[in-house]
Length: 114
Length: 116
Image 1 (cartoon, rainbow over the protein chains, first blue to last red):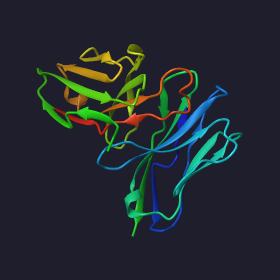
Image 2: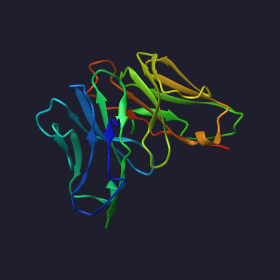
Image 3: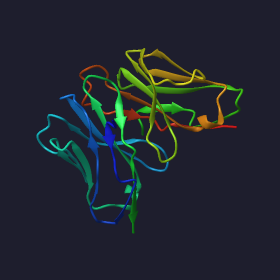
């Protein structure tokens, strides 16, 4: 079974609008971390935001927030006030606390339209 | 600026060449990773070193040979590669061990490898 599922291969959003990128995960480990990364066309992987399995509140980092629904095993990324520079691939990832391996989803290609 | 440094940024090599990719981090991380990534695809895990010992080898062909000389350095030795090995190779590091679950991976900018 896939550990991380991203069901949106491509998304479009109007500049200044908000967009939600979906991510669901599968684990039996009670302790885990969820991460979102941005990868522009230049190739670097940029860490955006982290959510721990025991965190009571949704994580926020500037214009990024994570909508964490533990019972549904979802960790959607919300980008508010989209900018042209947000156009990139976005990957959701998970790390179980018992190991060093990170599991990546297939990614969502986001295009911000002026 | 990235805290994980990879060299070279670009590499073109023939199928009979031997070359090495290098990765360096000074964040005190004890887990280091090599990934292969094709365009518009997620990174594919190749190797994980934990405390300088190889802990995960994802059935990578022997033409790729990793080496971890110390806790800051990670190398990937390349020999007799095939055209399908052309890809972006990413190095990453993270806090290792069982208490590292809330720590992200930090990636280098990658090496774009082309095999002629």
